[in-house]
Amino acid sequence: MSTPTSSPDMDNTDLHTPLSGVPLTHGQLPKYTPWLVLAAAVLAGLGLWLAGWNVVAAALAAVVAYTVVVYGWSRAVEGARKAKDRLVTAVVTGSFLLALLPLISVVVTVLSKGLARFDAEFFTFSMRGVLGEGGGVYHAIMGTLIITGLAALISVPVGMLTAIYLVEYGRGRLAKAITFFVDVMTGIPSIVAGLFAYALFALIFGPGVRMGIMGAIALSVLMIPVVVRSTEEMLKLVPNELREASYALGVPKWRTILKVVLPTALAGIATGVTLAIARVIGETAPLLVTVGITTSDNFDPFDGRMATLPVFAYYQYVAPGTPPEPALERAWAAALLLIIIVMALNLVARLISRLFAPKTRG
Image 1 (cartoon, helix red, strand yellow):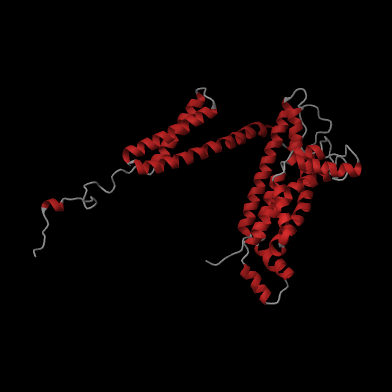
Image 2: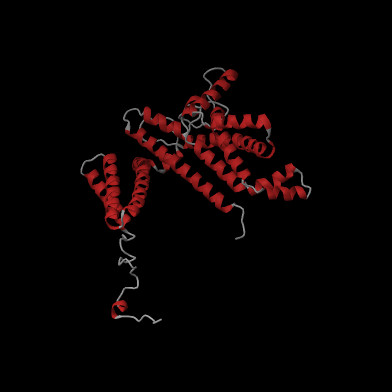
């Protein structure tokens, strides 16, 4: 049998060319193509908005143009199969950008209108005797911190003990009933929590009562199910091997929970508690019903009305007085301060989760 010899034609054949004669790199768009098309679509949307289009219509037009161009270009160059993949990717990306648009709009609006009153007077003065310009939210900041702190003081022990019972001890009908009611409490409207706290104190002190502790109890009704759920999930993530090792050493169950289970889940529990506080700190409806508003400093949660940031912003906006501009500036500044506080709490939650997470060997 003779050995085939190479010919000049074979020597000139591209090594990257398959037998069909089509290069392996045929029909590939550059990696930067989707980003290039997206940038062009965003610029086109901005142009339409500056030309007088509604911002929603301009954004929808940009997303549709981005999707159509990417799909058409890919189908012409890469074929139908790759074009379908790029179509789905473009739809997901466009949907994400559309969902991000309201958030960007809120942040830009609050920043542009709220920074005007971010001064020393705003943080160090109350509204006592102020009928026009000036004044601040010192009393509302302190009221928010006091009421939210009391709510956390009530909710965290109750929520953690409930979660420990459900995970470590709960069996039978009682555990199922507690789980059911926790699920129900997770979905109740915030105004219902406020009405519950008001009805409870009205039975004791009579109608028309307003106290900071009422607001704390209303917020705790909203916080407890969040703390229960987050703590419960963190406790379930603790490996059973740790519990069994502790039991094998003769350690009682309560001590195992206290010394082994809780420290292992501490990072997740602290993160859940922080997020629960961030969830209730901006609630307005229950505090309108239970705490009300005042223009003076009142740091006693058991005596009279107290001011809080969400209620302060609400009243400044709905009853601005004459002229309305100073009150509206204070309302926007209070809203910006609330956003900053919630963002800080979320960052603290992430930091706690990262710093106190149990270290594992790779």
